[in-house]
Length: 300
Ligand code: PAF
Image (cartoon, rainbow, N blue to C red; front, side, top):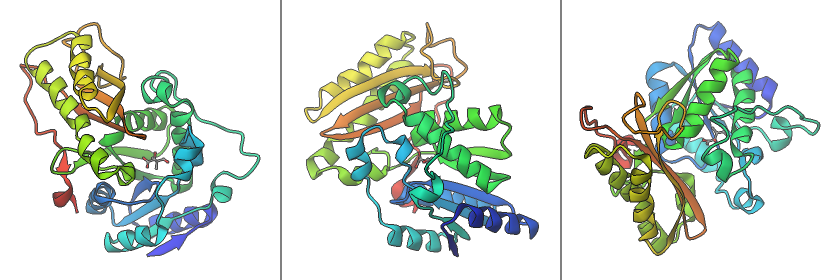
């Protein structure tokens, strides 16, 4: 496994691999790798001989300085996880390498980038799009793997890659969950034991919303209330948003019978830790797939 820190070295490494006939699977991360990332690396490795992982805690996507300062980091452990996953190239640039002073270009995706996470965390999604655009530019033709846990991020990156004709196939991968339903996230490490127990409320809220949709509820506000009511009943939790949306553009439809597919979104604070989650919501006539995602044990 080669570890490169400078952007031109990363570009050269992947150009060389392509010249040798290898197909590249890219897994962009902010480190603190857990079973969710391991599942992304495994999916990338199943389809591509050369897996590249980027590890960069992107300051542009943090709307609160204390959030950036407290973000868990352990490069040594991350490199071991990459090695175990058979990763060929790790790109671990410094802030100055990735965002040199004088950087003046920002990528924003209108509409998709403005709602939900876009309005709750101003600048966050533009920060994501800007850094992912830079990673795609350095990586060149590849398939890039993103978790469905950040469903809006996945939709936004897909839109951006299509709009800007980037030579990147964006692949979405199922959310990996703990057995009690909590979606894996690097932020879970910041929860106290009591908060960790309370954090299952996000999944419980999604299940309440999903049950309402499965029973034929077609008013988005009623499904949203079922979800936010579940969250508010948990003393350690406060709701940021809960919504039933069109899975394509994440807008709230007039009736839940209209969109081709529905998605339920929740964001909540558990103590001071902000968590998000989402799931598909089949309507009565639609096939019910198991949307619990992968469990952490199965994914590792
Ligand atoms: O999902 C993440 O870890 C980050 O948002 C990403 C895609 C690596 C961009 O910094």
